[in-house]
Every structure is written in structure tokens, then in C-alpha cells.
Image (cartoon, rainbow, N blue to C red; front, side, top):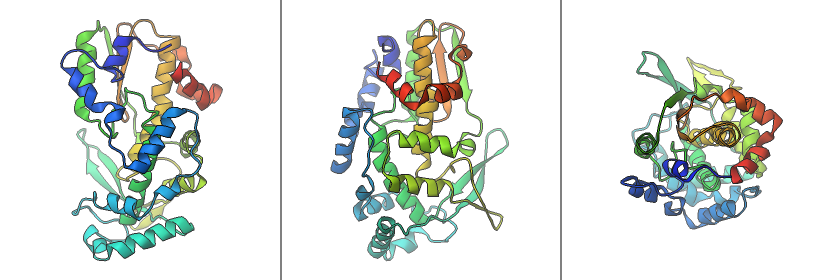
Length: 319
């Protein structure tokens, strides 16, 4: 059983009516341009939702690393090693060759993330992680490969930090949902301190549902546990994924795909009455519905994961 046609439209799964038609056509999966080897991964992920990818690291080569390096901001702040983009570029080919060699020999080790703070609108401070340049490059290359897998899985209701999607499209989906349906309730949810509180073990279990290359999983775990450099000291990290790292947006979307998107899809099928529209931009969630929302009927996300497990949520998605 799938959501109603109108619901799928405002969540980006079919073409919505009116002016939103052009927005939807730009964000359809087929319009994303992948390098040829990533296109093959994406097609394989689309063919079978249960496929686990056992050999992905060989896609991390010098050309992939250089492609990510060219996207780095030249004025970006250096990490704990003090190496800037300009310094690294002076001997770029040799530096990338050495990085690629260390990755494939299993000798690569990430450095702690330098923590800084930026002001928030409410007067607080948001922690921001600044990885070393080589860590940024490698994280970006791994994120590209994982994105080719997960873009086949992510639902149309997710807009944050995805290729071909933008905040404007999320706002357009909200506008369509509000203006095209009879709305009585809007739930505005923001997951408090999400990036600081991600459970590493749950995240790794979620990734292992699709990613079975132990070398890639090892890299991700090393990044999660690399530690934080702050006030002249290195602090261990047992939770969270630092905002500012190249891999964090992809990991956040993968985590929330299971913890929010699939769970809400399951809840909507089993317990909801009337139409329910969900729009998520990373950890910011908007629910639009005609009836008051009571998620307690579904037992909660953690209970769903512990009782039903990840495969059950994935099977529900395909029904």
C-alpha cells in the first residue's frame, strides 16, 4: 500500500500540479548526473532494495580524490594540521597519490576534528567541526559513492543535503501541501542537538544494512571516533558526527531515513487517519495533516527499531 497520489505529489514522488511541476521534474532521480562508475552503482541499488554492496573502496581512486579537492573552498579554515588548500595544491598529484595509496594499504588514519563555534539565532553557539584537509577530501569521495547507493533508497520527502535538491524545493513542497489540501494541523519538529547525539552503534547498524564493504565501514567508524581537538586537548567522541565534515550530511540522512522517514511511512500506513504529508530537511521536520497527530500509537521510533528491525521497515517501504 502506497500513500495517496496527492500525498506522493507534495512529497516529491510524482509530478505535482500547477507551478510545482517544474520543480518536481528538476529533482527527479533520473536527472542527477553521476560519473559513469557511480551510475552503475546507482542502477544496481535501484534494481534490488536488499542488495548489500561488498566492494566499494576501489571506486576511491586518485581521480575521485582530485574531483573532491577541486570543490574545496580556497579560503577554508585549516584543520589541526594547519594545511591549507593552497599548500596542498603545490604538490597535488603526489599528495593525492600518497593519500590514495595509504587508504588502499589500510595505513590511512584520520586526525582529530578541530572544534570551533558559530553564533546561533537564539543567542547560543553551534559547534562546528573543521577536519584536516586530507580527511575532508577522502570523506567527500566516500560520500559520493555512498550517495549513489542511498539516493536509490531515500524517500521523496527528504530534501536536505542531497544532489539535485535545495531548501527552495522543500519550501515549494510545503506550499503545495498547505495550499492543495485541507489542513488542520501542522507539526514543526526540530531534533535537539541531533549532530551531537547520533548513536554510533545504531548508525553503523543502519549503514551495514546496505554497505557490506568492511573497509568503507572501517573508514566511517574511524571518522566517528577520531576525537575532537578543543582548547589544546583531544577529547574522545562516543556519540555524534561533527557538523562541517564532508561525510556528516550523508550519514545524517542515512540515519534519519530509518529513524524518521521509514518509521513515519509505517506509522502513516498503520495508524494515521486521513492524509499526512511529511517534509524533512535534515533534522528539521514538518508534518501536515487534517487530524491531530499522535505518534504514540505507533510505539515510537526506538521501539520500532528494536522490535521490527531495519529490514522490516525497508519491507514496509516497498509495499
